Image 1 (cartoon, one colour):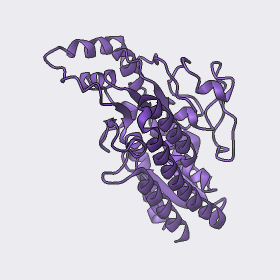
Image 2 (cartoon, helix red, strand yellow):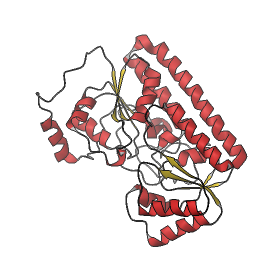
Image 3 (cartoon, one colour):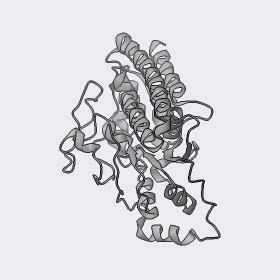
Length: 340
């Protein structure tokens, strides 16, 4: 599938912020220009950075904007250095769906014309895309006037708004099936940029996709043993993973949405969430290790008091792990908790 090629028009930083970034990028502050022979791939997070490195090998340089678990992509404030990094990119990879909208502002502000791979657009839950067996029942499809057909989602020169899409779970890197398509797109784009290494990129992508198959096999084993088991997630982060494992999300939508957006959970919704955890029907609670709040703490405390396993998943790649290792660990922890 070809990647989207366009300038994305989301002023998440605001016009004033973009001008400020440009103003800060003075000649004295700018880093030395990179060697024209070096192909640079810039990604929004280290998740996509590691995936890109798996496909690229040593043939290109991969630079993630966010590489630390201490940085929250939802509220990340881009810098002048980030804008220069994007300006020098030969290929850009972002999550999309409103998750890392700072990238869209950096692309616009830098004037970059590099091809852009938007991972969310490879999800079968993306509005305008036909659903398959990986689409969760909980995700409400939202009409999108500019994307009337799946093929159009990946068409060249196709602009669209990347604000948060209502009803869409943007955490698509937790869906191995989506990442398989993203890997193919990365290999295709890199082959265009470095034709001499096309065979290497294709081979690396094939090897990576084979490992994705291992993740899907592990998820199928959970499905076979625990289909329909209820899981409570404090945020939508692992939603695709639990759906692929055949599990049911027992979390009130209003609860997970409020926590993700940093808002107070309504008292009635909090009571509903605590009742679900204490009901005896929920088998596992999964929290976001990188964010939290008073309501999340109450849910975790209730789960602990009820003797339920509590797992913590992250949004960014833990240091020293590959994407495959990270997802496999999450899957193994989930399987272990369900079997406890």
